Image (cartoon, rainbow, N blue to C red; front, side, top):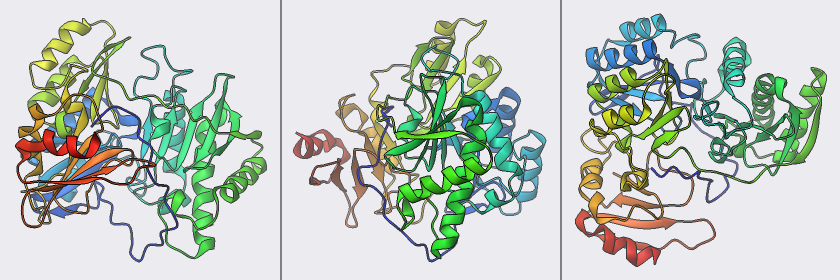
Length: 424
């Protein structure tokens, strides 16, 4: 998908759930048409080379051989056979990818992927990431969070601050940090050293508000109470713990995710449709200087200290990874489609790839879906390309402040014409 930071085009309202959270993890697998699916949480997207090597070994030994990146910087393994859960957990645990079995689905943390590498952020958020993940895994209350609850740690540049997280901590130029909840317009200004602890306090306050409401909700913006009320509750908890804070307007400026290329002491590549072959993944581990950083935009950032970044970038381009910031692939995303999903009406990934040359590299992101569920679709401005019941596709715009425009398309080769009809 596009590396542009995407805000929701419509704010969420209270959405009580009538069932439990079935979000998959590594201990709770999801049954799909192509086998079981495991979602491995990777806080901040950060993997050591050893952990990355373990993931590709797991994909080849137990899965379909590929690794799939998610919009939260996590990794998925598909095509898993029945009865492999024990072996899977053992392999991941040995690599340090399963630090707490009771918290493995709630370790949803995105972080600015170029933090500490390109000199653009206010500070390096790695200490925040380490502190929050440790606090999260030590919190008994946090086990009750939904697998969809999201933390964002922004180094001040505004990239992950635009991803509609439930709890966002953003570095500020005055040396402090801004703690924001959901889509609320105000935030609490706190000391930079309190960021990790404050983020967990906010999540625990959300859980208490959800219990008090009597409704089953998974995200902050689904609460029936106002954001101001929750912010007040967080402030009271912080005050009780001796954490000083001040209420302020929330920063609204947003930047994009990292484009492909050499960026300071790192290099960035985009992964078409988020799917990495074992060969591509191993090339990434060979190039990486100690670690890989998976991004929420289905890309990978690699520190390049001591290596030739241009040579490394060329090596990765030769595998089919996107290294050109003008590539139309940056606009395109898709659900798994056929044959992996029984509900899908089309092989959307093949259709998206075949239509790639018909679109311009700039414009709204396009998201191809096999049915109306539109699994994995972006929350910001975009164009939905949804497989229709009788064949072909229905295109519709999802743009903030504008009435949706629609068009039918009987052949993916006519995508450019259909797009022109609804976006011009």
